[in-house]
Image (cartoon, rainbow, N blue to C red; front, side, top):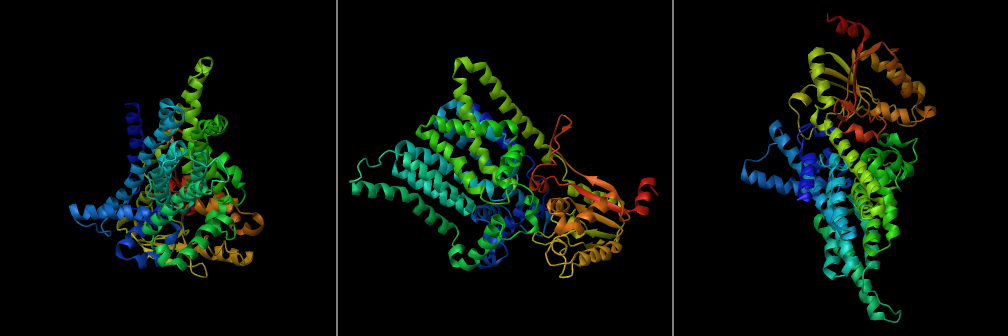
Length: 570
């Protein structure tokens, strides 16, 4: 009954607000590519594989969405992705997959923690995961992380069974789960280490070096999950074989390049001045889980290692193996911390349960457990304010319609978070690209209810090889084109982290703009924070994408004479 109640909490936190922000799936760039990839897969494998960045993401969630869409089209009428209502339904379908798999992780974590330390550990771990903010947040989006995590947790569970009994069917299921997880997201390969630890702990290892036949059987059993995983991956993603050159190029350029630092695009600029290995602890887990769960979960990992029994070692191997693999990258965005939500919930539950069994420490244990569970739950309730509140970008769009006349001249940046205007707001095309990218000279103009002019902070002001004088002349040439500036904090934050020596022009532009030295005045700001009982949690210091995808800040500037009219109401 307790587990059912906890699962109900998990479901409520994940399914509430799934239509939030719909149908503007462009707001979340990862969601954008997964939805678009699923739609292309329905038409043609070749179209999907040949599309930009397709192999950045595993196709299994896309296939799952297409199955659900086919069922919907069979039961009702086919979705038409030029109709707003159908666009919203399509987005909710995809997000419901993440919400369902995210909820399903909770009972799986219960079973894992119970195998390690009993029912109490299982219930505490399940509750902590149910309320883990980074997990419930990502469960609201149709990206690949929650799908990957679900299959990873299944593999983790069967790794525990392997360590316990060494039964061959458990190796097979663990391998299939590994393959499915990698078919969602390639970073699930960290599970190879978890399965390796489980195999080393499993009974049946030969005791004599001379037992050649026994060692061969042991080796074959150990590599079985890898062979099964390869078969499952190829079955789910045959495009990786059929279009292996494109697959290799996408992985090398879009995945390995930015994470290794061989290529430093502006969309990872927020990590320029941080220490990635420590950033996981000082920022991702701090904001993604809350201080109490982070600290207690890390202590729990150490406790599992101290326990030294086989289930504990396999349980500890999950967070250790994941961090060891993921921390090699230089761009730790918030969603990368999702596996550590389960990886720390289990150790935290085990540590709480073990302390509660000690009579001398019972009062202290109850207090600690209450603090960890209580603060995690309160943080979850506060974060849900983001999904209960109107999206700040859409609120800004409404303000523009009410206060900025048609055909006004507006300067915008090439950001996915620019408030929708014109047909983007009123008649959105699901697969349309509404970002006003600059041309080779950084110029681009579009008339769509308003006259929109781009300020190319994405390429022209960022790319090396452009002299500061040229950058300054470019900014000076763009400002006279507009009476309004509409921007979010995407590029503002990027440039704040970039060095003054190489990006002084753009950094000075933002300083001058906010100081009112460019002839513009800030007239409106839109922002939503996690909030509970009327008290907001200021998370401006959290990793940028934690804020950017679901609660960015939007700024609207007007020329000072227009700002004066707004103030006086004339």
